[in-house]
Image (cartoon, rainbow, N blue to C red; front, side):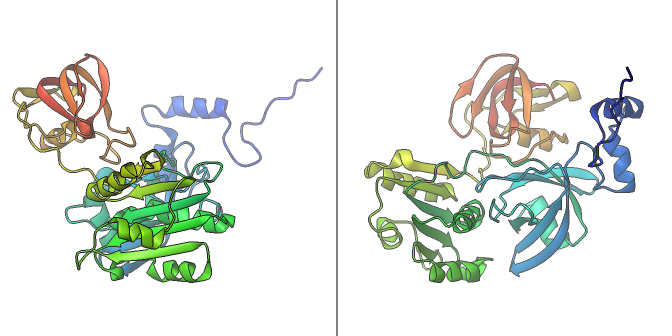
Length: 366
């Protein structure tokens, strides 16, 4: 009986695993993609990338990008983020951004709105230099800040500044679904002119009876309060899920109000910025980066910040403890989680560099 051999390339053009393993063994020490990218950076086997197909700068200091990903892309859920990698002066830098489009438009490019923050290396680079044809690295969508299934009876979206991006995706997704429950959207911004999608938001507000959108300018002193909530979501209560993304002060104010009314457990939050850890009283000692052979005086800042100050370039993504791409092995010493205040003493444990500050002597495998 004749035995039919499997072809090495599938009908879709994907290289089958046995051949891929052989090619990678022959390509050592580099992966196959390192050679393919010399011909076409979008011709990848394992790595996922995206090409910028559209660029606009709708407001001062912000850039909107549309990305066409490679075949490995599997879509996203509204509210999630992706890691985008760019090479600046020969060094690859990764940052996290939330797609702003609807999760149901799989054939559309990935839409990102990036605010050029002062001192933001990647955001400033994209604002100044992004153009059609730019190829960036891309990671699969991740994050637990997302709409629940089944959908709740009503939804309250609260955002501030750049925090609008994930909740804007939630709004567009619900609109595409024909969601019939109440949607209240409360956004805080320095001036309305800073909102890239303000015209669309006003059009959605006017076209849908179940949607109420309130854009609050903070320049005259507008801050979140119960009156704003009542204005945009009168009768808020049981059956409503709340999604908040913005500065810590906004998140804390919303939680305080919801906890007082007994709805705190229905609040879901996403942090898009984490402040510098700054020095702590129990700093002192040294931080040893074992694999690099570098030892520095412990300043009390996060281990990621201290590594970068020492000239090291550990891998990282979001810088706020969400993506786990900066995880490294702590061989010994005590660290503090700068988000929760918890301390960790166990040796040989993986820790996240961006949210861990050393307390005394610490040895890290970097």
